[in-house]
Amino acid sequence: MRADITAVTIRRAGVDDAGIVRGLIVALAVHQNQGEAVTVSVTDLERMLARPEIAYLIAEHRGQAIGYVSWLERTSFWSGEEYFALDDLFVADAERGHGIGERLMHAVADVAKGKVIRWEVAEANVAAQRFYERIGARLVAKQICRWQPR
Image: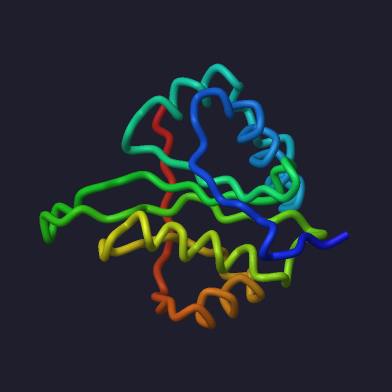
């Protein structure tokens, strides 16, 4: 059953929400067929949620978490300006197409107060790309590099 968009609340997650946040992260990973990749613990998330530069907003309907958006506040070495580095945007499968993702993105924009918001989207995730373009984001092609020296 889809949530009535007017009955959805969005709030900032606190340390006490670490278990809820972990559940949402796992749900996103499972959606992306990467469930085994999630190794963060509730204790890890409690520590992270206590840091002021790390933020999660949780979308809830009738007390049930149905989505989230997360970001880190960063500073650009090129401009010296602060920006938001969006980490994840996720809405539960049953709740998609109902405006919740857009509400979460606008909630981040409200918190950002005019700061740039940057994020990555998988090249194969065409639906997400269409969504981001629809809300006015500009997609910039860039390769992502990962390196874990041993």
